[in-house]
Image (cartoon, rainbow, N blue to C red):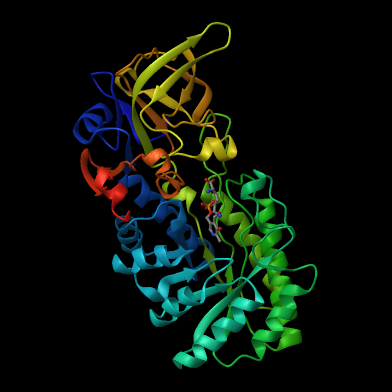
Length: 430
Ligand SMILES: Cc1ncc(COP(=O)(O)O)c(C=O)c1O
Ligand SMILES: N[C@@H](CCCC[NH3+])C(=O)O
């Protein structure tokens, strides 16, 4: 459990001061519930750390792939963050929510011409260029539109972070970015030096997600600053911005032991200061792109328990009214989650169950070997820490409508994304 939760007099789990059983009753299940106060606190922790360790010369750009809807862009804007978007859809949503274009970082390993044109016309702050084809397309489009644009190069720093192989991106065998050790990144910078419209202002890397060690980030920072020095010497370009991406791990279960961001940021900032001094470069403007660590622990998913199937000597299945359609992370990465029977939250966890979804798919599981309170059909089950990469990765497989998202703050709740209706499911069918 985390600081957002408690158990009230009825023995119900509360989040952000709101009774989860009452929320389930009011809005139906499955339901995503997010603690707005916690999201804002997390944003502030990053901002304070940037003030403390970089004298305010930096920004945390929320990686909105973790959870994207209009309201989150409003919240992070109010908290003074930038955002990272990775598609025209995220960009469009952020702009519609009134997010300032100049604080947007546009990512993607295969941006289409249409997406780049949209970004140019919307005067997006920074394009993080992934490959030479994109660089040339961008320059051509900028020429046509008579505009200039600040760009960063995405670099694979050759750092192997220890996390699930599907969410590891800093090593040479990755589809993202220019490799450092082969000279590909330096060659790309050389090409940038010859461009008139796309202005190279910095370097970016993102080594992976759900990482607990600090050293891979320090190593990546040192390598990128080394490359900045080389680019200055060999291409005559002074790069003032260092974007280290996101990836800071969060606690999903008792097994996870993340370093508090403040300590983490302090150590990375030391590495940056030392490396800049060694290269004779000014300390760059630092950008971080936290996604999971902003919203992950702030969210839970509420389900109604349906069928219970005990297979003697094998396991007990508890089926819920959602599953891989609202949370595909177990199916994709065998991610572990903690679960609580929300209407019996004060009782000890005496059962070990497999939590199964409702899809026509044996792999549609949310957790195996999960410890929960005694549980029967009709109970409300809360799966914790689902704020990141759940709603944003949800699907309509089996034509299951996506759940609503409710924000809670000081005990009050409001819908920020409506539940999909059956009509929504057939809206585009002809
Ligand atoms: C380029 C980039 N930046 C930031 C993030 C956010 O990562 P996380 O949610 O692990 O902080 C990602 C996702 O892994 C990413 O690909
Ligand atoms: N979607 C992944 C992480 C990938 C992050 C995006 N680069 C997850 O749920 O953990």
